Image (cartoon, rainbow, N blue to C red; front, side):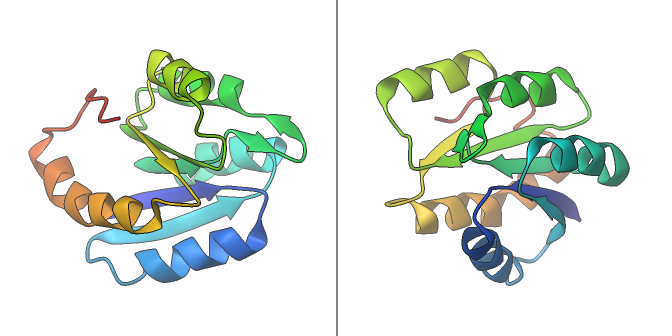
Length: 133
């Protein structure tokens, strides 16, 4: 079972993602958070296999959080899911180790399709360290 953590300040978006991910075999949303302190505590407690996160929120920029998460070798996959999909943000996230980068406004279904494939790849350990952007 791939344990997924969702970090976004929009409750509506978190609920939508949870609903979509509930239908994917082998994927379980173990926790969600809207702010940084809640995120750090939850990641330590639940030890997810994947973090889906936005990089900009009402409380600031989370690009530094990406660096901290990818520094934790325990979390093999980080997915950036944001409305801030400029080339600059995409480049910075690649540099910091994001495995996937999706635009919330246009790539909801693409995110879901990738997540449908990851539990099987995770078992085979084929995606570890792979930046698919």
